[in-house]
Image 1 (cartoon, one colour):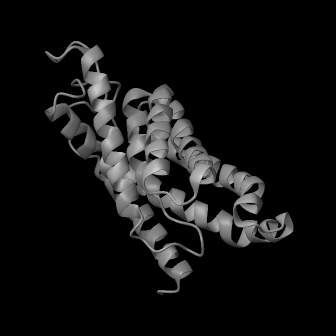
Image 2 (spheres, helix red, strand yellow):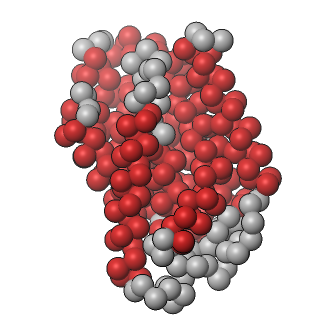
Length: 228
């Protein structure tokens, strides 16, 4: 994977480069969220691929930037296309932050391929656990269902769905991280890196792992939808 971008390798000042990059990443995450809405939901649970863009943002700029982009995109989603209002905003924000923040924190500490994989594994576990808890808390109010009915769905619906969703997003992150960073550098939005992996080619081990995780998760989603 890549090291933190340095701040002296580009003619554009860092204090101008980062806001521009964040703005672009917010726009990309919003568009990816819209594309995700074309995927049929599993019962009332929807797959949201924007977490991939936001965790990559956290890998590049750190966990606080991931939180900032999450809040911005979720607020815009709430007032433009969402039908779930404040409940949807809360759940979307918890979901994305519980995925992106652990991954970014671990990758900040170990900026290697192993650090990225370990961070994403922690992200999947964190998001799955957090969404089970928050669905138990919020869904009875949102769906108008007794808490006992929601609790019965935790092991049979919420846990497997979020585990599969996190696995897909982890796989896509491994596949898209390098191309996204390369595109940002070519746009002069991220400075060239002088650290590990800054000028290297694709890490084919990470590409293969990402492809395997994405394909496996996609197959599980198709099974849950009754397609397979």
